Image (cartoon, one colour):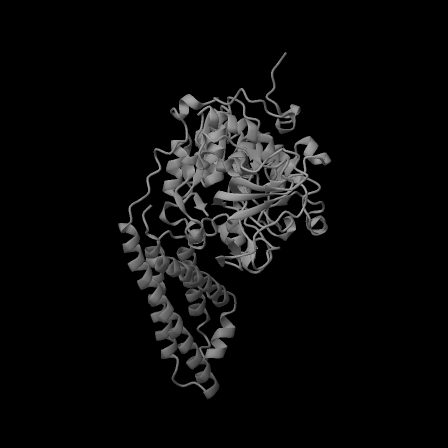
Length: 390
Length: 179
């Protein structure tokens, strides 16, 4: 089969790889009908995440049709079913899965011994996202082996198009969880840093969950226009002071809820502290650029909540934890417990309350994946979300 | 789907080179500000430390501007002007040096000439690329709400969905309600 493979920094290739096979009784093979490039894939493309090996198949946002199942599936899914596959691989049986903490499943990371050393304790296996999370081949391919297929994949009705349901596997639940864990009150102002795909779903989720005022911060006019279309007040951080504007919009008190939908690659040249981070990153004295975290901690209202769906990878410098403590902030983080939210979100899509395909800006064949990684990373051509078709 | 990707590749490369030149500018500037004496001694320009420091500040300012600017072209042209100043300064100091210092000055002149060539290429590519990009139509996503009705009417449409207990704010941080 053909797939998009990682071969180093800025080097993704469309190439021939062996077909996946059933390796375990609870496996299934999915023929991919649609997949997407995620913002977090760019951290791999840019070489910021350790643990990739040359030839690894990329991608953790995908859906398709079941074409083969192992003998241990017990009819939970069957050949011909149309499924969206959550990016976190879950066993459904360990203590964390039973609690609904699927992204920290205790059993699906087959390189648990490495993750235990790096993170203290292992998290769940992920598709196409380094050998720290199991080294599972990803979904930017014609076929994928799906482990624990009796509990992970979400069956979707034929009446909905791929583009309407594809994002149930990651970015829609990711934006949703980021807002849900803010525990929105009807009087809340929610400020969202980053108007990329996850930021866009944070905006819609905050509106749907009833926040009084939703604000989105970015620098790209087309992204801010899309956020505004979803109900957000846009702030262009290259044209105005984020802190001053947020305080203006909240009578000087700051937003109660702040969401970081940017993560470890905050724009490197917008502020002095970002440039400092970029220089330290280049000298390997710091792994991530936490400008957004610093700004959120500074501007958040005391006793407010900071929610972090943006991916961070390692060690962060000059994070003002004294402010966190003295302001009594609550910090909520984590990879998304996708399966916790899919039923509710699929329901919203079926009811017509939201059509997640609004975020798609580019649709191309899988073979054009390598050039689309660059287009997406460089934010050219108004690129916000790329869907690839094998 | 419009295919404008080809137009972007050259401009993208120029932006990458510009970022590199920006960081180079800052690194050189820091060195000139922090250790001017080492430079003047090697080049036989004793007594010119203040001048070297000033040039260092210029390098830092230009490099920062290149990195911070959405359109770095004018700042890279600024680097070209700075290169001309550097070449003139080095050239003026070429006479009356001992052989070692003349060799050092020759190396410095060659290095600055090389960087000047890179600056000129980058500035021209950015200027041309900026023109090409300006002709590309801006993508308009103002109608991409994803909602069936205006956002104001969608506010709270999913409030009926239950929020799991572990996702709620701690009780102590819930808004205080007397009674």
